[in-house]
Amino acid sequence: MEEKKISLIFLGQTQVGKTTLLFRMTNTELPTSINATIGVDFSSRIVSRDGCPYKVLIWDTAGQEAYAKIARTFLKKADGVFFVYDVTSRDSLFRVDQWIKDLNEAVEGQVPSILIGNKTDKPNRAISKEEAREFAREKGFNYFECSGLLNNGDIEDAFNTMIDKIYPKIKNQNQPAGPKPIEGPPKKSSC
View 1 (cartoon, rainbow, N blue to C red):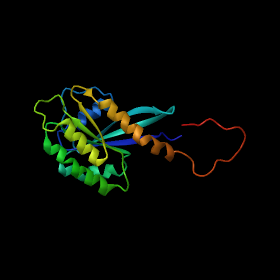
View 2: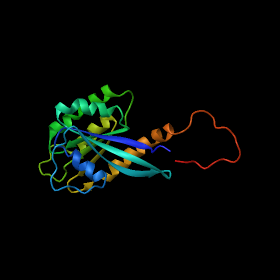
View 3: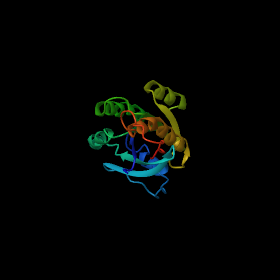
View 4: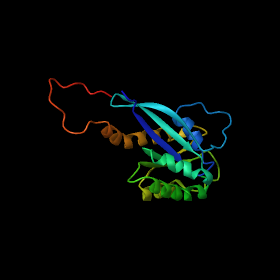
């Protein structure tokens, strides 16, 4: 039986904390120093829904414009997208619009998306929680805030909300097409 996979991707400007969130969402120990991502990196985590295990691959893309083409390639296979911005940088929230445009150009249809405001541990907040919520609401996204560095806030809630948003689609992709033949007693559903 082929292993079932879910692909998630982080998009956002460089230095907004995507790599730190990747470590936190995959329960990986945070290294003492984190360098800027070059190209793409990933980690994985196993989740269970309806008794079936799924391997969740979480892709961390470089935020630099030079790597935007690579990120667009990964968007085509993404089941869900986390748009990440830094709550102390107004520009990082404005840049989310460009990442949304890139997503819309790369894929047909809607891809479940969540907006995450990171670095809530930093002073000098530039974007209020209310403003960010309104931005997310206008885009049709759920909104969460956290500090990836301190591992507090809504990191786990954002992850679980994303899985819950995409699970019905993933589950239906694994169902056989057409009516089932009637042959003896029903068999237990397998993963």
